[in-house]
Every structure is written in structure tokens, then in C-alpha cells.
Image 1: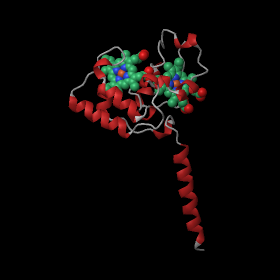
Image 2: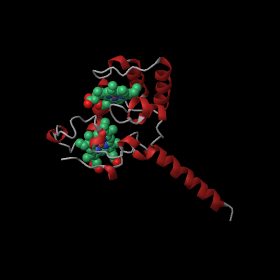
Image 3: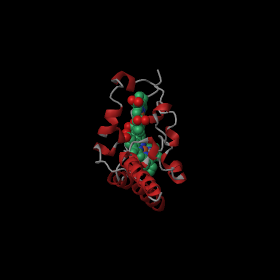
Image 4: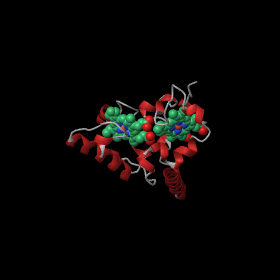
Length: 153
Ligand code: HEC
Ligand code: HEC
């Protein structure tokens, strides 16, 4: 029975291609492990945002502008800036750059979070949509799976 293994291989190959194709940038299953240096340098003030959640263009702009980072100074030495910038762009997503290069201004983000009302965003335990960890309890691990969402009161 020659054709059977070939069929199986083809089916496997197409299933694989199909899965990769359906793999949207925000899909929690497409996680790349976070670079330790990235966690050290970019997770002091907020969670280490997964690189796939912004396109390369946005990461490059953010990394070129660290001294003026959303009203704060997040500067790093040139070598570290370069290393992190290379890693972020290598693992970047492929959507259009959102306004202000904010994940939270991306249309997929607004869509995923459209059931959350304005008064919820303003709760003391949340304060800002950028504060992913308020609701995504595994955000510091880069895991945004719905299983780990708990909205604080
Ligand atoms: C000194 C504190 C600080 C450090 C260090 C820092 N950030 Fe930020 N970052 C901020 C603040 C403040 C905001 C705006 C948060 C808000 O609007 O609630 C922000 C927002 C962001 C956003 C946009 C979040 C959104 O709203 O979608 C990205 C992306 C980001 N930072 C990436 C980085 C990267 C990459 C690094 C490391 C090179 C870094 N940050 C280091 C303070 C920091
Ligand atoms: C106020 C709570 C809250 C905050 C803050 C928040 N989220 Fe969410 N997030 C949710 C809820 C609720 C959903 C919708 C889950 C659903 O519909 O199944 C969601 C969905 C998602 C999803 C899709 C998950 C899936 O399994 O389909 C991603 C990715 C995501 N959020 C990323 C982020 C990121 C990145 C941040 C920070 C920049 C963030 N969220 C901030 C509550 C929040």
C-alpha cells in the first residue's frame, strides 16, 4: 500500500500550512520565548509586550525614540538598544502600524476588547488599557490566552 503514507504526509503538510496561515499575530499559541534582556530592560514599567503585537516599523520607531517614551525616559545604551531592536523586529507582527505605535490603538486590540466599558478601563486596579497585567494574569509570561483573564473590580 504505497499511496497511504504519501497521502498522510500531504494531509499533514496541508494541515500544518493551514494552521500556520490561520495563526494571527495576536494568537497566544504563536508565542516566541521572550529574550531575557528584553524582560530586564523593557518590563520595569509595564509587562514585556510580545513582539508579535506590533509591526517591525513600530518597534523601530519606538526603539529610536526611547528618551521620549510616552512621557518618560526609557533610554538604553546603544548596544542594548540595537540588540533589543533587532530581536523585536525579527519577531514582529505583520499588521499596519497603529497610531502612536500603541498596541492598544490597533484595530484588532479595540475589537478584542470592545465588550469592556469605559468605566471598567478607569477602575483603580486597571487605569490604562496598556496595563495588560491588570486582567491578563499571565501577561508577564507573554501569555494572553483567555483562560488567564480576570477583570479586577
Ligand atoms: C521608565 C519606564 C518605562 C520603561 C523602562 C519602558 N517603558 Fe514602555 N511605556 C512606559 C509608559 C509610561 C508607557 C505608556 C503607558 C500608558 O499609556 O498607560 C509605555 C508604553 C509602551 C508601549 C505602548 C503600549 C500601548 O499602549 O500599546 C510600548 C509598545 C512600549 N512601552 C514598549 C517599551 C519597550 C520596547 C521598552 C524597552 C526598550 C519599554 N517600553 C521600556 C514606560 C516605560
Ligand atoms: C480590563 C481588562 C483588560 C486589559 C487591561 C487588557 N485586556 Fe486583553 N482581553 C481582555 C478581555 C476581557 C478579553 C476578551 C476575551 C474574550 O473575548 O474571550 C481580552 C482579549 C485579549 C486577547 C485575545 C485573547 C484570546 O485568547 O483570543 C489578546 C491577545 C489581548 N487581550 C491582549 C492584551 C494586551 C496586549 C493588553 C495590554 C496592552 C490587554 N490585552 C489589556 C481584558 C483585558
